[in-house]
Image (cartoon, rainbow, N blue to C red):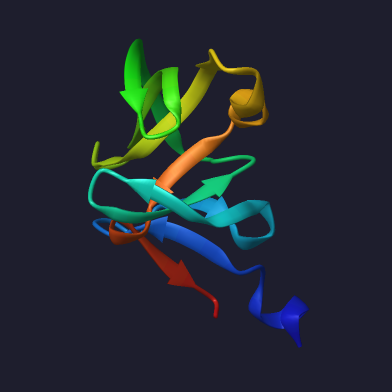
Length: 106
């Protein structure tokens, strides 16, 4: 049945552009700027902004905001670098805020 419906996806809440696969969710226990956020191993149909150092709850990180490539809505950020050894697993991963994404094919 799943083959007929297609994969479960997350899309931009604003324009419904597909931005991530449910299978790429690593954790749903993250905090974004505006509440809960999900950590993804991959994201698609996004633009990555300039890198900046930011002090987050888990320490200093170099991040880059990610935008929907269709409507330019800020969806979250990409972890470019983690300065603390215990946070290195986040490098190259994406935070998408729950309030900025919608589910498709659920």
